[in-house]
Image 1 (cartoon, rainbow, N blue to C red):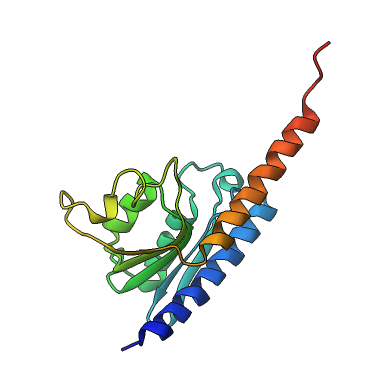
Image 2 (cartoon, one colour):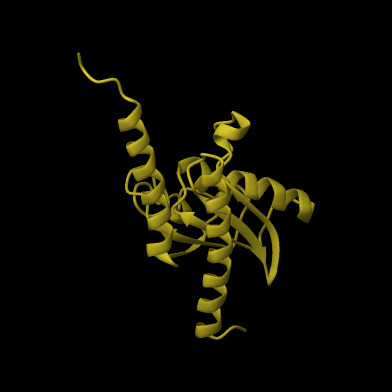
Length: 167
């Protein structure tokens, strides 16, 4: 059994790995969200957003990581898995986490617009669904928020440079 301090260190370790995946996604001009799936101390999968790269609206980091982890585990149920996501999952991803029956979700920063775990819908804790997920939020929150802010700040700046002036 992990002590509380060891558990916090493990959460931070895996969140740093998810942050690396988010940075890799940003290099591909993807929204910088990273995710990893861990069972015990074994990394099953890690992914960043790939929606633009794959031209696939479902290729969010969490979905890509869940697909790979399920393939590696040989089972679509990931009942012993802990999923680490840099940003609070959207409704699609939260639903996929429930369908995969993951044990625990750890995320960094809230998504005030589309977060479906705590901010908007409470999907992972809904008693209407057949599985609930233990959720830990705020792990490396400032780093997770900062990479998103950096990405969108750069995108707004690039958009401003490319706009034609009114004549």
